[in-house]
Image 1 (cartoon, rainbow, N blue to C red):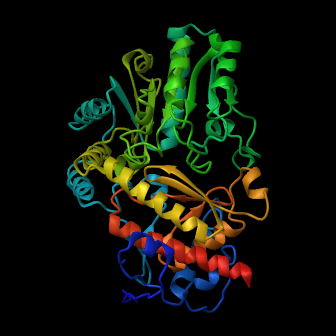
Image 2: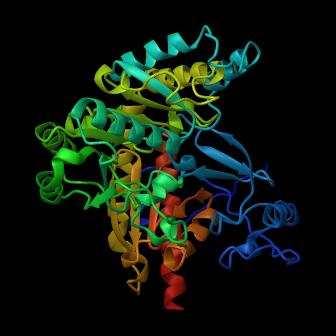
Image 3: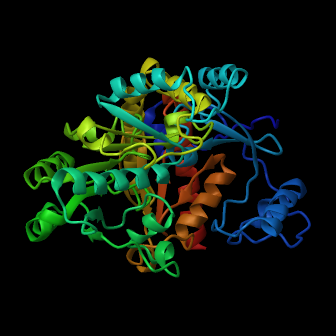
Length: 472
């Protein structure tokens, strides 16, 4: 591993904090022989031969369904940091889209995984196993629900919730056959299955994949009036409203205080189920056990995933009360891997780590530290336009000379946000644009106060370098 070098630059943030920060490795990257490695938006000059080879194989033999990953090849992760092929360390400010809230390779989660993997990993649901019941009791008690339906990925959780809502709509609410509707918030993102893209308002997600799932409609996010108007118009046929408490992929869009609790009251008034998609926002990410806890709201159906396994294996879960969950009968829903013993043990360990280490409280404190630091930096770096978020789900908006990236609402790396992410990478911090000029900032919830200070120094340095480059 390369020895770190000490920076002597005095920054506005350093003056603001009035404390020293740890040095970081900022060695030069040689421009090695340029083979036919895909040019990741002009940043491939930072690759060495070994990294180029890895990226080339991925490009030559894999599907091209991810847009311009940053030019770095990661081989190891521990806690808040990951390491590339040369051993250079980076703070991870994406956390696998909030799947590693507990930090990379948390020892207690890895220990639970190894212990169970040596006993039993998978057994058909045609038989019972000795772990599923324990897990079901643990997670339902943890979140205050009657029952759980275990799945694997977040989008499977979403599909399961929609299926449950439709069945409840027919069997309990009395919606006529094949007339059930589900409402979704505009600019939602919950996956890329055909059902998920049928609810999307982003052309990048849905274009070219029709025909789309019937019975799905959109209403504006954070707009109670529009939601109630739709309820008033057709409540008899609406089974559920599915919404993210904070829209992550849309650019960390935080609704008005009380939004979720007011949505729940409207749903109760019109006999509509509230489905909370907490796959990205849940599990202490926003400084609360669940993001809906901020508004004191308990949804009728709760979807969890990502950090439910601490970033080790795919684990998701759908929780609901008896009236909803027991509408499903044997043979009507299932999954080969859902509720497997390995997943159950890992999920219990992951949830226990969140509780034992009080990661909700750390997310609140470190998130405030991050926003305070960036807001202090902002007047010194005009390229930084806005900072927003809750807990450790945050975003910085980069001032753009065009309106394309902010109005089109699609995914991309164009403009200054991509350039800033490349500079952050050079300084040892990994982040990625989410919608053109918006960069999501979501480190593992285990990040310390000192580590956050170091990261703010890196952000300020990268912002100033980009600002200077524009003047040249």
